[in-house]
Length: 634
Image (cartoon, rainbow, N blue to C red; front, side, top):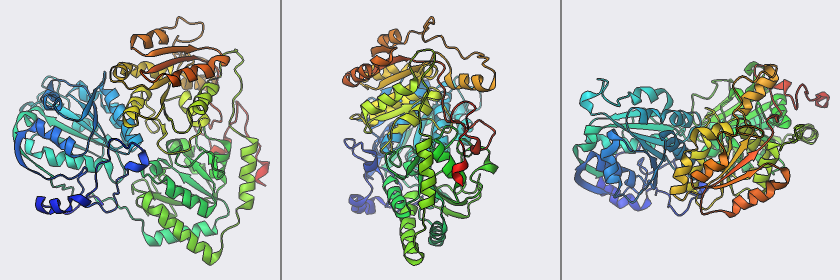
């Protein structure tokens, strides 16, 4: 549902007791903060308090709107065009966290949203302040993260004149947001804010920009709440079509090689418990994409791994050999499919997704189902049980024997580096084992990201955060910061590369000053590791501009230990295998400030398995020039 009937203040007063409430700040468990979007009484988020008409400035209306929408935490950086709003913000009960770069504010809002299920909020000024948010906005768009970015704009009378610090941020962000608003009338602020939060949090989640002219901030207006939300044409379908669900159940009953292909939409839709019921009902193998890690427990016997360019042999092959893909909240991304025309060539496709634009976009669906996976999966489970009662459950014994053999024959692992330095995979695996499944792990982008996806065991949703669609270097530290604000009682690790870390490490100052004790593991291979891997494999070892001089036998510029100490963090370095556990344990014991560990590792370790770009997933390599034997198929 996207648009409710307008509710008068008098009627709202009578109904407010039953209206959807903003999640309480004290309860940060992601599954507990789910707002039921199937049939809300009001499209306005928050407790829907009734505020009688009150005269105030537009800036005061911005702050009051955020409070009424149930916002607790904001990440931002002031500047001239947003300065009027920072004045009333000072007296607000909301927690504003002053970042050191606007990109950090955007990624922090993403991390906050990912672990809490709430809309993340970031704020910046006009011009370069707003454009510094663009990377994070694009990242949130690619990964369907609910976020509202508020930017100041020059006064409406000079918009379009190239005024000082003017940028057409609405035009810039229109392709990478669900919607971008420009507010020039202060009276529009309450309903625009409510609409922005509604758009960000319903349907397929995503970022929304609200750009507010300076004169709209300082101008007088009459504030009342709740406002009317008027979004003609925006009506996301939530319930799946019952006929399509029944057709899907028939395909499942007729399949001898089904696979549950689970994407990030299951995490965003808070449908992990429902997924478990469907998996148990069908007995089908489950693969969880990079964005869906933790949606289904790694330890469960039905889980066969992560598919994709660096997925496990069992997961990649399961999709290639399947006769049916039960696709839930996934988008047939090129990193999963490889060469699309060769992907899962024998499979029929059931595709369930909240976004109708994704269905049949890359792979034609035999049974498309538009709607929320949280609604569709239970309906499909019941339909499958009914179908099995009528026609009998399929025998998946041979299919599981094949996949089980693959799991046993080609487990994930690594080769010890010949240079005698530490294997980065061992470091990351021990971080996961010593911290446990209740921790939160936030990766940057590159080799360390893939190793963190492979070698940490994820048993619950919202424990794994990364930049999947955009692949944004610099994501990890600020996103971990936002995650720690959202889940202060959990251990939060930023698993970063030495390249990524140098892009946003200034947010360590934010963490130290605001008592946000994240733990940063720099997987320091002294290079842009994934680029270097491709240079090794495809450019004859010509390492053009990938050496960063931060690791073993280099000038160590910067020295990460000295840098961390300068930022007020606990600073550690680990260069030997025998010190890994003790160093991690020491980091886990420090909770009064951020911890940064410089793990100096081998530059020669590579991510395996790997499907080289431009080839079929059938050509997956388990090591350099080593492709699995496929006689087992017969």
